Length: 251
Image (cartoon, rainbow, N blue to C red):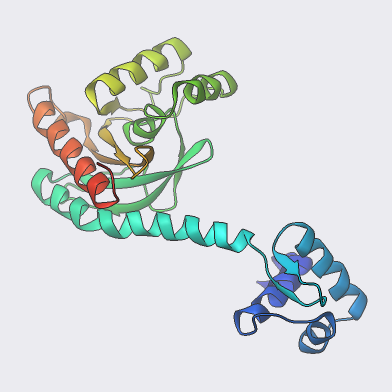
């Protein structure tokens, strides 16, 4: 397994791991603890310092850089939403008996961070860790739709809208219309956009700054998302999204 890993990255990681137990270390301490040549260690710490992973004080001792604080905060924020959302998702799943997903934005993509399966076994595109572009599928588009308008327009301009399922929206004009409808309705619906014969309804989750922080959706067989059932389902998804939003500080 190890031979597939980049040696420099592995060594850098070994070096950073030393700071889990020691708040600061000098270059000579790092050399003796790693057993690596001084020139290699010096080269590595210089690069890590330049990238913000390490910082050096006046005496020349190294400690972990502030960049870890940013990453740590991001991870904490994201994991918190997942933990807070799970009971709400489980309740929603019991009520509607469809798969329930939680997604978060990662750049120009959405990443599925939690999923609760209903009793309806349906092969869905979604799985924890799976990614989708922000324009495709109700869950991802529920995030895209509630971003600041200039961000949406910039995203559409720079993104090639590729077809994934038979219903994927690949026309920028139509996508903007769908986004406008989502903003007006407070939810997003998709049919066969990521997986043929499936449907989904997504709603945005907002944080204490009233910014979209995540998206929640229910998904299943298209045949179960009938016009007469849609109002009930959309109400349930919107309600779950609001519950989670309030729990993370949205007022």
